[in-house]
Image 1 (cartoon, rainbow, N blue to C red):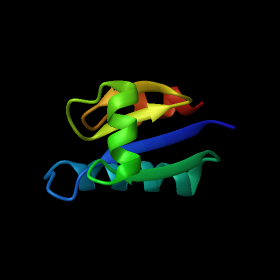
Image 2 (cartoon, rainbow, N blue to C red; image 1 turned 180 degrees about the vertical axis):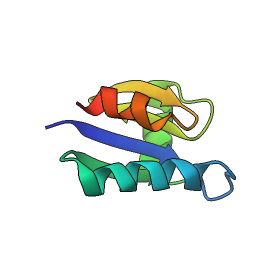
Image 3 (cartoon, rainbow, N blue to C red; image 1 turned 30 degrees about the vertical axis):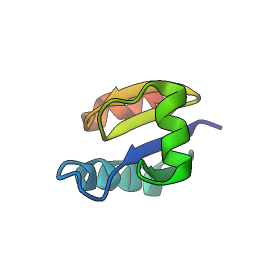
Image 4 (cartoon, one colour; image 1 turned 90 degrees about the horizontal axis):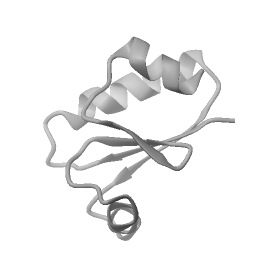
Length: 80
């Protein structure tokens, strides 16, 4: 099963749109999903591991797939 991790921040103005996109897709498609605030220890660990320089960043199956908010169709292609 595909694993999607969204790295976001509470202070990010764009991040809610990314969260909405992935939550909407999750309600229609079967994949594992988690969102992690970059300002938490887990978020900081992911930031170091994947060299994340901006949020939102989407990691799919252990690889950075998107920086910013992807288009719906582009996101669907990555999880299909």
